[in-house]
Image 1 (cartoon, one colour):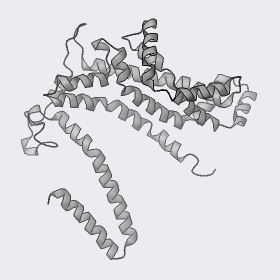
Image 2 (tube, one colour):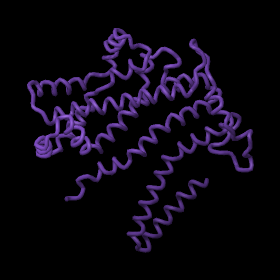
Image 3 (tube, rainbow, N blue to C red):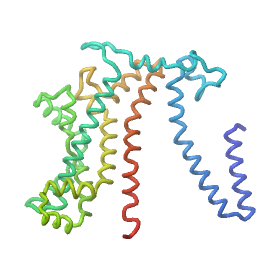
Image 4 (tube, rainbow, N blue to C red):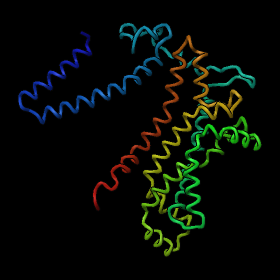
Length: 307
């Protein structure tokens, strides 16, 4: 019996003892915290393993699950060789390419696309929610129908359009076609429907223009949903593989998912370098998530208490 099995058995015995002694409330609380703790361990163990693999030398990468024993810590077991190899320039037809260039490409692509989608999708959602115009129902049905078409089927006409615009092998060829999406428009439409029409009419009476109503009144009220959409959009573009792999051809213009896929073959005998690139690619989405965490909480708790 290993240490993990002994620990689980001890927790189970402690729960049974509390139940036998009649401390049901304490037993239920103990069980709840134990399950939460075990769930947290299951989630955090892969990340701990990844961080440990980043600093381990290739000679001991598969020798220890996590870090080697403290008495064996040395330059031969723990070092920064994976970072040195990762950030070393790679030869290409246009000259040496560095890993930070791929990070910059993904950052520009994901950030620009996210900002543009939030702006245009929120405008479209606000218009569908608060304005009446001819053809609104037909337009809504057309947009809903377009969501049922697999994106792969649209790749050929989209690629031809990008070629006609002369945007192949450029980040603009990825950003411009993704400036707006039907999914985002309907998310903002549903959020804008909750904004009272009386507030909008009062703003018009005070002399506020239509764009001012959108920017100063509606957007602050739908901020929790906008934060959630921001994270969804950023993660989708940051992890995008299919479109960048098709539209981008030059080595110095590739994004992180495409490059990390190439590294699987290039560093098949030195997996620590690939794992280091993977760990670094996880940092920007994690930072964005923690930055928007308060907005998520306010979105979950809004309406929970009557005011």
